[in-house]
Amino acid sequence: MIPVSGTGDELSHRAMAMLRAVAAGRAVMSSSCEPDLFIDGVPCCDQMTAHNLAHGGYIRPASTDAARVPAVLTEAGRAVLAPAVGHVA
Image 1: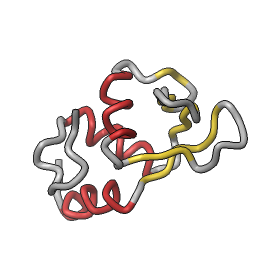
Image 2: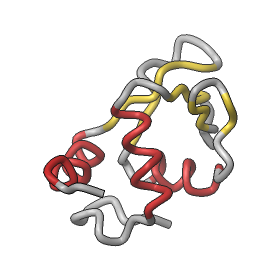
Image 3: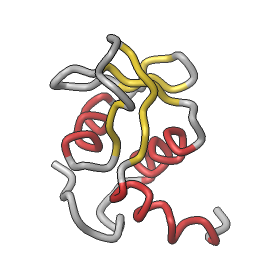
């Protein structure tokens, strides 16, 4: 499982891409105990990483009012992405 705290160095490139998609408003997730992530309307290919991001405190559902709701970054998720803003890939 992904640690809750840290700099993001422990996150894979795929996990970071998923966080960037959430930050861009392209992701929705189920509001269940094992939240599934959908990016651009398509189920994410790595639901284990999506679960780890949610359980690790990097993303959360915007609300619990519906089965699928927008995914949002938590403070930890924003902090992990902040150093990557100036990084050119």
